[in-house]
Length: 242
Image 1 (tube, one colour):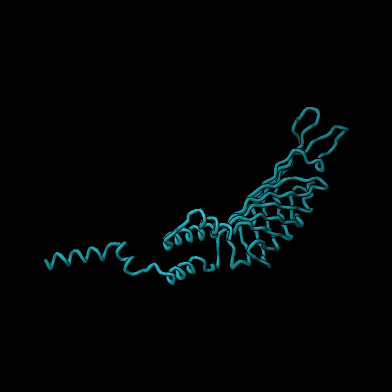
Image 2 (cartoon, one colour):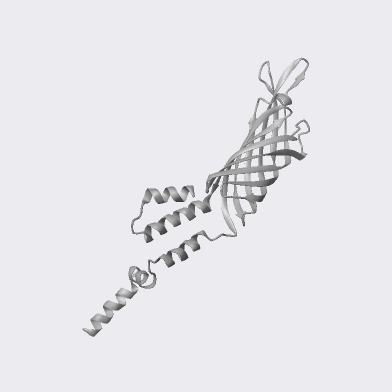
């Protein structure tokens, strides 16, 4: 009987549920300790952004779309890598006329970029920053006759760009932000001499903070574990809107 009882006690000690109940009490003090562990600030947190830019070619507006992903360091510096593309056969500033025949431009641009943003003000609902971007890619310029659509005079080459300006992000929910930025775009180098890439730009993007999503999920599970009268909908709403 003694041996049997020892075996039963040993099995109970090895069970996860038993260990948990013995080592961790569901008290208010323990809840505070666990919640502080979840919301503690991190040096780096991941972030993803879908970006839509409007750039000026002379006085014409052209859309550049892309995305970037990276980290935010200590809520002060955003470092990401991005990819952007532009494809348009309607940039009138690049059109040309030869022997009274109009040739329409078909311009394409693809580039990768290193994005840096210095965040100088950050509150619950908005943040302000100074974005700087360095980009390297390839651009292609083709011409088609407006008469017979025959392609002619194609050129392509490497392009190096930089963007700099100001930005603002509105965060109605902590893990989703609507970002607006604007500034100036400068072509440091372009092998296609006929393309002038300098000009103003505006950008509208949707920023997603994965760290906040994970944190809210963990807090939701923690409150469900500790609260006796747990309200699933109310807790979810409070976490999302706080």
